[in-house]
Length: 249
Ligand code: PTJ
View (cartoon, rainbow, N blue to C red):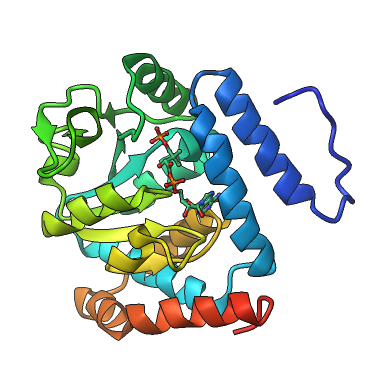
């Protein structure tokens, strides 16, 4: 944590704490400097959403939990922003759903890959994929295309938080079920997702875990019903309405 103390009664305490986590991520070599810009973009949308999980996002988080539980091989993709913001929470989600964790960077460097793998291990992760990089996402330039063949390369369901649009589309084109967390419902990532989750990653990941734990004993039929009943177009439209109307759907 950086030296600056944030008073807990500050009206935007959570938002300021999030900024400090991102700053610390940059200082530790986990988050890219572009990650600071991405965070600013996300904050603007979060502010318009009322910094809350709107009901359609909660429904998307439940559908995401059902997809992860039904999957043969679910993988949670981790970038520099996500690692700085919710490392322990991702480890818990991986445990609750039997998913693999894989570091997958837009601005890939070996130093940052290793720093993020170490950071996740410090937060309780046992196996973290991404360093082998023996698989490729077709249609993308070299560094951004690298994945583990037995990780994202083999996954049927992938959680891709805060992803850039190109790569989200390329993963979708590989036929993977894509669960995207992105505060901007108009982003190409959200638009190409099987399940677009328009919520802040700091609220979304613990909430997916909560749903996954609740659904742990649900039958496959029940999980499939939750998946089938989720309407991605309606979720995107509800998020856009909430942004226009100041956080109310
Ligand atoms: O660590 P790397 O190299 O993989 O790079 C990661 C970033 C995020 C820098 C890279 O993927 C990137 O440049 O992403 P974009 O194109 O800026 O897209 C990030 C999206 O995430 C934007 O649509 C933001 O609105 C959204 N976003 C930012 N912060 C959050 C968020 N969504 C949810 N929660 C957040 N905290």
